[in-house]
Image 1 (cartoon, rainbow, N blue to C red):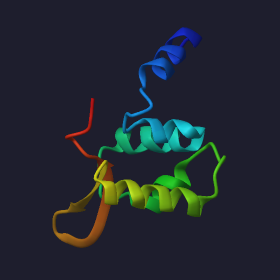
Image 2 (spheres, rainbow, N blue to C red):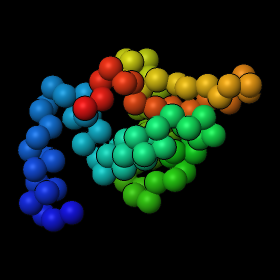
Image 3 (cartoon, rainbow, N blue to C red):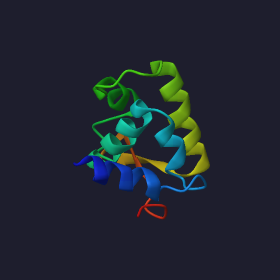
Image 4 (tube, rainbow, N blue to C red):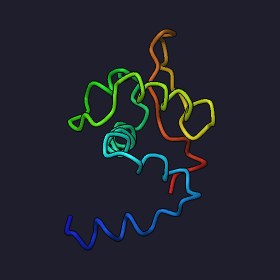
Amino acid sequence: MTIEDELLVLHAVDTKSILFPYMKSISRWELLLTIAQLDGNPDYGIWNYIDMLHTKTENPMTLYAFLKLKIEEGSLVKTKKIGRVRSEGTRLNSSHES
């Protein structure tokens, strides 16, 4: 991506958007992109996503609490693997994606 592309993304996200809280730190943004990329794969849970981050600008427990809050708010949803009750992943809520 070019600098212009990056700026377009930053300018396009309104402060009232569900994406805005993720933009408050590079780790949160990377976390959101990772969740979107894996699209609810139940082989990955919250801690797996946090462990995958290359940017470490926030405490892992802070990120965990942030994701739990987003799940409670409904902007992220848990997904379950068919046939394995205890396995669940996290994905973007499709009603909020765009």
